[in-house]
Length: 125
Image 1 (spheres, helix red, strand yellow):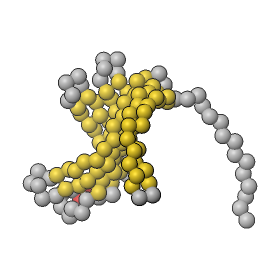
Image 2 (cartoon, rainbow, N blue to C red):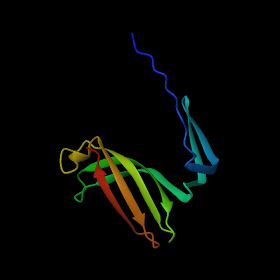
Image 3 (cartoon, rainbow, N blue to C red):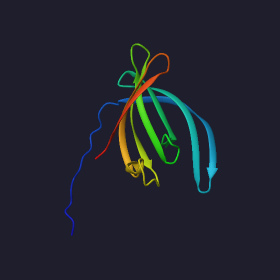
Image 4 (cartoon, one colour):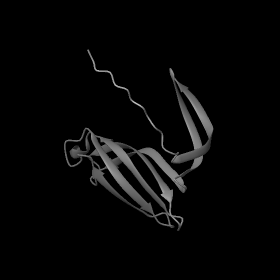
């Protein structure tokens, strides 16, 4: 027999508010893929986000690792995006990129006004 617990949840004030519009919908079997665009504020700050997929290729071109990422951030007073997010990697490489297989990382990206960026990424241990 399991013990019974009385759990009460309290909600804090909202920290994120977004307005948006669904821009596309595609049926895939018994699922729907929805695309949307929106703008929001998080604790009074303008919010930006990014998500996507990519492929890392070793310099010699012989190894590849796939990744998927999701990031959220805000726009600084100077109009520069700063994002924080995570990525998940997979690869069938047995060489230099093998360490990336089944790796989860966290990162911070800062973008300057010319579109140049610096991303610092660390593995979750």
